[in-house]
Length: 529
Image (cartoon, rainbow, N blue to C red):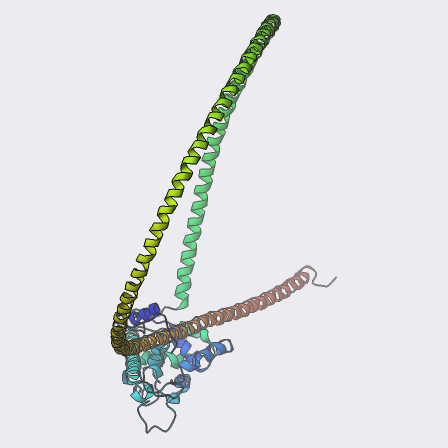
């Protein structure tokens, strides 16, 4: 089985809880196309051969060829093989000599029709023994639990499909009886499919009857006339609405033209007033510009005079500043010279003081060195004594460490032994857990595989239903085409007869005119002069 992810396994487990065969099936009312499609399956037209080949696998266990023999005096087969007495143990009958895939299971038209309409061939509702699920496709033996799940899944699907078949078969039995089907196919000619529309079928159970296509054509003509009347009425209303809107638009255009004329007159008057106002503003502007030029010239003269006064004042101030700066520099130079003399005297005094301090420090240092030598000798003697004591303590500590190390080794061996036992127990639990998980994964993958199988079967069933529906649809189209062809032939025959009648009428008219002319000549000129 193909491994799945955890989410896919969960979806597969949930999806398998309801019935996987989609047992809900809505019954559709029967039509004549359903019955004529059965004959098409047995004796297909050239247009249907490819579609009938696609349905061959669905009808290999069905036999309805006897329907073609009814029109020539044939009789229904005995025994009647229908859904209500369908054999479900064909795979269990080990004494059967022929292949079970070729055995005829259904020969009743209503049963075959029910099987084709729901897309479930009779081979899919057969019971299978448990031995059919005990081996893999490769031939290896399957686990008993997996085989049991597969068997139960197949059995549930089979029972659900059988229920669908029986439900559809019961609905068809309520709509039409076996005698009506026999009567229909006795009068039906496959060579002329359009004749099926003239065969009336009354349905049982108060469901009405199949109406012929002529009734549908009358309804269609009535509907077309009603649509034409509504279209004409709608066009009339649209024209009236257009005329009303045109008149309203003309009135609006007239009012707009009058308003536009008034607006243009008002606009011309405003433009004239605006032009006069602009000329007045331009004269006032020029006068203001002249006054402003005079004002600027006056201000420029006053500015030049003020600049000259400021320049003279700055020159006087610069001269006074230079004189005061010269005096200040001379005073500063004298002050620096006095400061330098005081600094040299201070340096000489500090130098003498440092020399006396160095002499005192040298004497003190010599005394400290002598005391340090004495202290060093005492410290060496103390160190020798301490070293001897340290050797004794180190020997005792080494003996103590050796005892501790031996005790630690014994404890380590005990812990290792305990850890090995725990590891073995953990490995055992891990193997058991892995086995449980593998078993769960195998079941999840099995459920997912069964779900895929159910989906594939459902898709195949829908394809078979679509193929049969397409066959019914094309069969109906073929009937319409055949009916149209016959109508055209009848029209051609009528037209041909009409033309022949016209020709004969013309010839008779010509002969009559000749006869009248001859009689007139005999009356007017009997002597032939």
